[in-house]
Length: 395
Ligand code: ARG
Image (cartoon, rainbow, N blue to C red; front, side, top):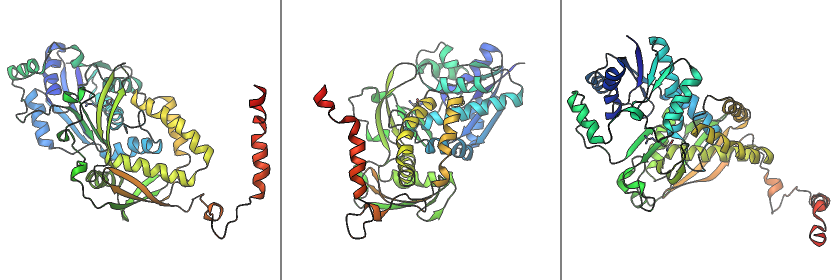
């Protein structure tokens, strides 16, 4: 019997997909689930998959790998799609693609399958990832193919086939969560004029409910890696988890944006990414202190390109990998400490220090002790302006 490895989330779609893949293609279905957000109940997930008809399920906690190999490079790249979205979902997909391929190879499966819709970016990210890593694998996307038009039809199919349907009321939104943030879409959010209801938010507290007293936090970086939070050394996953809680309690890291999807449509997306927002700002601030002007200005162009490549599903592409090397090249200087004030939805950098700092108080000061040589300025300004002299008169 030919085999398929299905990226299984435990939800209705992928549970129905187990049965559907068996019926339509006559395949043996092996499930693969990755934990990159909350670690949910493994036994429950296994039971659901088995009830849906699978004999074998791999459940892996991949938070460490996600943080080290996907979040960290994106942090170094200062990656935010269209200036806002820190790419949590987009970063999770290539990781899933990689593990689908590895599991398929281990199981000698000819097929992989996923539960992404035909309208989003995630199908692109998973499929392009899989094809880059193993072009021999065939890909099935049940949600693009099956005949269910509505959720009710799908629920009927599940009931007919004794697939457990979650008794808890389904969220009115489509949600994807991992430690780098959460994406909330659909439902009432599809009207771009409507303010997202407070109940739509998961990781952040409403500004009206946050403490009136600001909170100060300190983050230490060593060679580009955030290693301490408030003086306490933590692994990357733990640090991100704690920062999500601390900054989330101050309503930090909410984004409401109209976004250009790869498949051509604009969509309204609501994101929460408290830790990502603070860490991206912190890393940018620290680089701002230790790197020179040319580097910093040029990097901005590359960061935008990088975010686009990640968003567009080109994680395993040569340009993205080359940019990773570029962003990694100066991290040995990115050691230091940042002080942030969390205040009613804002994370504001209020202090920075580093042994590699290029900031010189003696040069910058307008007070006593100034060592800046003003006499050089006259000649400098003259030559800097030379190409422009008389330009207006002659045109
Ligand atoms: N629009 C975002 C992206 O393409 C989020 C997708 C989230 N997926 C979901 N099932 N809610 O990265």
